[in-house]
Length: 131
Image 1 (cartoon, rainbow, N blue to C red):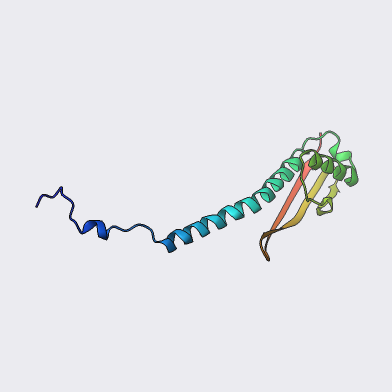
Image 2 (cartoon, rainbow, N blue to C red):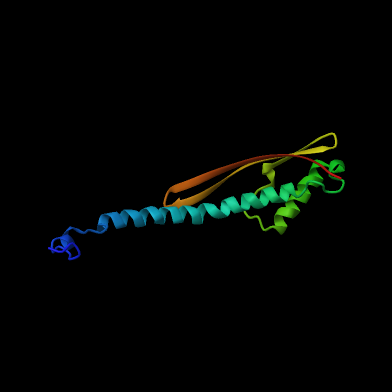
């Protein structure tokens, strides 16, 4: 018998993925895709909030502004960047001499499916001084 000729029984011994395996893989990757679609915008909004707050560094007269003025400036930046579903009450602005201390602490709840929710908590602290 030549080593290059296939053995007749070898085709029967070859197997692919079973239907159950394919179903489990589809469910697993479908769940990952659902999580990415549901949680992705939440993390993108948080990144936008961080960039808006970090952009305050070096703002002219930031050290002389009242906490209300700083909060108003932050609200304008978030509005321009189209951050939705964020309550400005989650931002705490305090002053320490010329420095402005900004603390952001909030959570976002989103439906995953049916009665299953995901809660994502964010907390950021900034210490800034203006020009």
